[in-house]
Image (cartoon, rainbow, N blue to C red; front, side, top):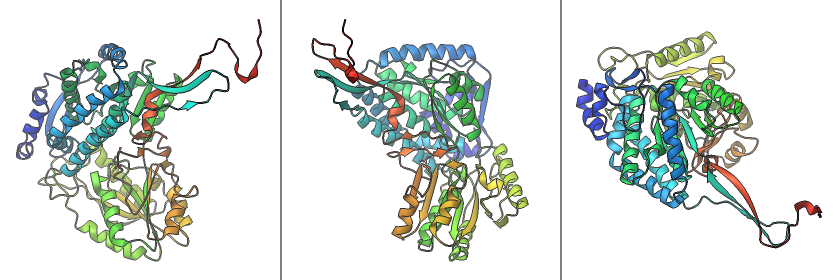
Length: 517
Ligand code: UN1
């Protein structure tokens, strides 16, 4: 255990999460049949080893599928409100373990401790949502065209839901999926990112305890570990009717094609290229807070991170100065230290991508306003700390069209009406989140209209990140079209059945067809 880890109580947190033994690589957590090569998890905070987790081989995967399949036959018979009760207990455990889990998220992923706690709060919130939902999995009733007939629809569980999640939200995205899937009567097989495997084992330990206390099979929640090859076992597997995948567009295209080839369902939550439009009527103070948090929060590694600021030319210089000034006050360093605003990137590969993007932006003609750079020296020994950068750029630059998972903010101007800003905002392949800062009702409504933002999320006087769990979360175009968490996102985790019941002694056919024997 490193000095930093001890100073910030990581050892205690690991112990509370039942992870102490993993440090020796002797166990990979409950309900984990993994026997393959170990993957080591190093903290981007200080480069120290947190623990090792064994990967899942094809033979291990078969065992997991048998366990999950058996658990499903039992779980689907449990009434939905009772399934909700299990999710309620899971939410209670998360409340108890919010600090240690938030700390592990911060230490293994690198986001600030505040954001780590926020992520666990999202898990708690989705549990509460799912508990209520467990009594509201409604279908509709319809009027039959035939006399003495009743027609209605109902929702049944799908079976095994495969969850592939990314490093940037190592626990919350799993919970968005799994809390809903469980109340819907599904069982889940989760492959967390190989960059944050300890968070996966910690979550599995928490739910395993709840299931054990309730004499339920642990196969309701299964964990598999490894890289994309382990993910492929699920995407190609007919026994997994739904694969919910969060990650890059590149990954999503591979998953979508594999799942579609076997006519399975996929729920995709892929990259964003999120912009804030700043109109002449914007509140500049609010704009600065929203834009800076959006761009540098989680070190620019949210799918909802603000990547572009589209500013009206009449206020461009004023906004530019206010934002660059705010950047000069950012403190970059250990994310467990609550004085810091920005922690490290996930690993040194991410640092290389950040550096390459800054070079590319300049090659394409971008003008650097706030130079980035990799931080070195005391406190930065992991090599993962970078300075948030701002570049004046054109929307048409190839690098601006891409999502770089790093704190790089592109500033661009628009002139004339808000439609010109909306055209720029929509002028990318991604369609996750978008925002407009304005006190002008007409502009706000035009941004929200059918001719406005083409994204899954469109906010007014709020930044692009930090969505609440109560709304459906996801995006259009190459973001993948999936919707997770709130609203009626639960429907994707269930199969719909239309039932028609004849309570007469006749057998009239629909559409008035006569078929007399
Ligand atoms: C993600 O980055 O994959 O809206 C999810 C937000 C968070 C979730 C982001 N609630 O920023």
